[in-house]
Amino acid sequence: MSRQAGCPEEAKKVAAEIETDIVVAMRRSAARAEVCAVPDGYRVAGPAPAAAVAVHDPEAAVTLIELARVRGWALVPRGGGSQDGWGATVSREPVVVMDTRGLAGIVSYTPGDLTARVRAGTSVADLNAQLRSHGQCLGSSAPGADATLGGVVSGDDFGPARLAYGSARDWVLGLSVLDGAGRMFVTGGNVVKNVSGLDVGKLFVGGFGSLGVVTEVAVRLRPLPLCRRLWAAAFVDAAAAWDAVRAVWAGAFQPTGVALMGGEDGVTRLAVLLEGTAADVDAQVTDLAGLASGAAVMDERASGRAWSAGCGAGHRAGGLAVRSEVPEGALADLYAAAAGWPGKPERTAWPGLGVLWSVWPLGRGVGASLLDAVRAARAASEAVGGRALVAASPPEIRAEVEVFGDPGPLRTAFKSVKDHFDPDGVLVPGRFVGGL
Image (cartoon, rainbow, N blue to C red; front, side):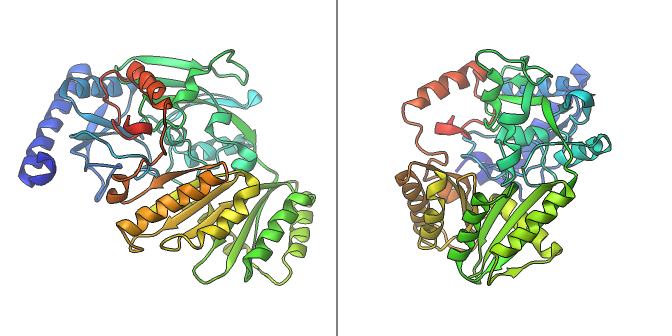
């Protein structure tokens, strides 16, 4: 147990010293930032933060990075907090959170080119609200109303609508990033085709802030769909639900995303997002009803709840969440097999993406039973040529398993990249692949 964690009075003293250092440094640099409260019960995959700082300009972020290097702090960039519990354990204390939500707003926007450059602390919801007047939107399928653009990019977060929208790797055109030495650099550009050769910016997508703090993102936009509808049905027989999924792929359907959820009540719920012209969407809804023989078709409100539950499968507070990524042809069998894993997880499949979420909520059990569950999920996923990552987990599980899986010989390459961009190990040390 660390000195800070084991002694409340010592922890308060350390926090006060850190806050004083930050206030003095920000005044000297004339950067815009302030010490802010750490959210109650907040954990960022590791020790409780000693302090949190809201930054409002890149200069404040640079100052904080430089101070962390000198003082030996572990610095954790954070946006809306939708992925607080994801990743491995931060391996060093004290932890200081850099709240990036003050880095908000659109820097430049060219509606005719369907491109924009946006500060990383802007929430996806706020960005889409501003784009709506131009009939455009960001093609992100990440769940969570508070998710920020920088957080979605850093965690490579996505939902079942990735089927049509892709992930951050598909719609990010360029990035402005501060690395672990406080150096600012820009990758990519503001146009759709701007990179030849190695796109270094892709290293930061899904890096959980371990290589750099994203301050701006150039994005590819999409026209708003003319019509958007959710259709959902409840099946007593899971096999019939999967038959309906196969019929969707075999028929004249163009779903934006599909989610299939198995509940503790034995009912399997299938939710489908449809977008297009009103006539086209209406025709597809009519045809979907024909696939739901014997199922209870849900009304609009219930369909919305089912879709939201399917999108947010990996974002429930607490508990254990494992994301399996397997060949599409193996998804239905893996979904069925997961019902027999230790602890009997709640299951959500994203057909078309080969993704299965297995979730053990808080109170479902800890210790050996959940460790066995992780091992079962990983073994079954790897047996069909896929992989399983532990997105969120209780501390005792995170301490016992490699959440991203064994990187093998690639760890050397990962470490080389980490050492280049973050030579002092300031940025979320230990949280990424291989404990880097």
